[in-house]
Length: 257
Image 1 (cartoon, one colour):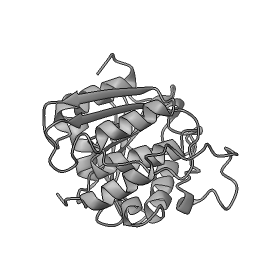
Image 2 (cartoon, helix red, strand yellow; image 1 turned 180 degrees about the horizontal axis):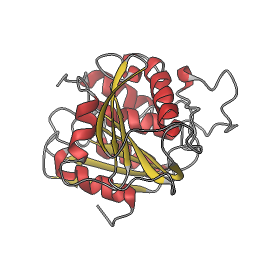
Image 3 (cartoon, rainbow, N blue to C red; image 1 turned 90 degrees about the vertical axis):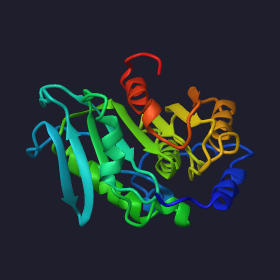
């Protein structure tokens, strides 16, 4: 795993210490300003008009990038299904982004895991851009093939993927109803939209992204900004496994994680 620059993480987090940016004045995505550089996603669920892959885990090569999709057993387009976009940590791949959430049993949701264009998600390299454009196209590809419930779309991530999930999720709160961040380092939304619910888990013994300076601080800032935050410290280190399945259960409404 690529270790993140803690100095960079703290610099971005410090920039957010006064609070989140103000809500966007408009929620539609038809303006040129609402593009990848602003972290905006335009893909939205619709009735599928193409045939998708069947139930199970599938590796994809979509638009020149690797990705994985998990289709739950019993999937049928006769009803709308929950969907989670899952983002890997720095130096990982889409396989890392989806694996931990299948190990404890197959969830009743569609999981979509892209691979970052670079070594990690573009925001930590200087700003939103290529990864937003790719995620948008991957979601559009998915929405055209699977029937998705627009009220049950979430974004989930681990480590730098958790920081990206928070940043992208808050910027697109009109798409994502819930955000799951496991061991995040920071959040840097361009402008907030909506009020998605947020679940954050962080290990007290995390030596990569220290608990007090990152996850705990981010949870406090979100709580002060009026978000519905579930914060779960745990006595482990920098590892998504202890709470991965429970966090997914929180998204699915299976009870408290």
